[in-house]
Amino acid sequence: MAENNLMEKIVSLCKRRGFIYPGSEIYGGLKGTWDYGPLGAELKFNIKQEWWKTMVREREDVVGASASILMNPKVWEASGHTAGFTDPLIECRICHERVRADQEDVIKEHEKIHKGKADWTEAKKFNLLVEAKIGVVEGEKNSVYLRGEITQGVHVNFKNILNSSRLKIPFGVAQIGKAFRNEITPGNFTYRSIEFEQMELQYYVKPEEKESMRQYEFWKNMRLDWYKSLGIKTENLRLREHKKDELAHYAKAAWDIEYNAPFGWKECEGLHHRGDWDLSRHQEFSGQDMSYFDEETKEKYIPWVIETSGGVDRAALFFLIDAYEEEKDRIILKLSPKIAPYKVAVFPLLANKPQLVEVAGKIYNDLRKDFVTAWDDRGNIGKRYYSQDEIGTPFCITVDFDSLEKRDVTVRHRDTTKQERVKIDELKSFLEEKLK
Ligand code: GAP
Image (tube, rainbow, N blue to C red; front, top):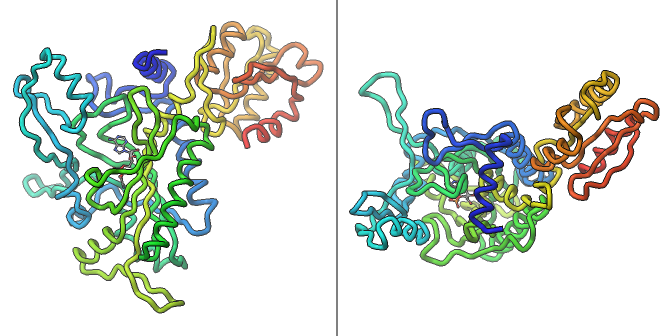
């Protein structure tokens, strides 16, 4: 399948089936914003839930947090974002379109419009922070920033978290939430948006080279394995180290988990060794002590930070792309059952047979208590199967005339299309086992 063609198909499927729509579409949209529909909302919820399970619930050394989007503007001075959170911007003198100077593909695409003769200005630094105004008195409103990364909400609460828990270094604080960036060239569907969600871990370690690198290696591999465990093909993932001139202002070292997207190898998650940048800067700018006291060794120090920072929207997009397959007469989203929007669909074989509808309806209502379940009684069974394949539903249950006698149903598997009979009373345990 041609690569562009694949993106067109994904975008179209997302709109048609209710995964993702252009933001505020009825008003002509807003560039770089996207709205998630019923299936997209479930997909994103499942991704976040899996992340939280692996990163927080299953670990003794990680706790969660949920900080405000709006923060005192001094936070962004301290974090270095007001000065250093910039992308190089160039402007076409012919049509005044602005693009990022480091995005060769976008530049080439633009130059085609002017038959290869675009006339660019010198690159200048463009700050990505999005400003907002708060306050109730016109003329006295205060400027604040919508957070450019969710990270700082955790670091400013380092002492609060430490003092209200019994955590000992090394430990981590995990958070999921929205971030905002004035991207110069949003694009590639949801890949680069101006509003997006991040899922991050800030892991505090002793300020020692060897120990911090050991932890860094651990988290790099752990995060790569997480994507694989949710079904992304190994050959479509890689780790790439940032060159010195690519490093963000806060990073001592950085690696990206990249995905082999139809538009090239692209960053899915950033893994950063942030050293003592954040806590030292907050100590300096707030005047508050941000150090950690080790009861055992009696040492006092500013911990170093290993960060894992993934995008929920990018993960959702890459899971969708990776799962997309076409067979002779059907489209299938081979999503891991763990993140598939619906876990199961229930059909009465014929919609005009009340006995079938009644039994199927009872199964549907029972299963809905434990699994996100779809109902479909339109058209023929083959079409209903295909319709569920296209949205990634791993199992379809059909109630037929035999079901009335034998109290069993047909369960059809998405990937193999194989069918088996399962007792109605055993459906719940059957699904629990398959969805583990
Ligand atoms: N706290 C570190 C940090 O924010 P980053 O590499 O700038 O690091 C982390 O961003 C992740 O956030 C990226 O790997 C990506 O998944 C997501 N992300 C960043 N900018 C984005 C954008 N404009 N649209 C969608 N996702 C974005």
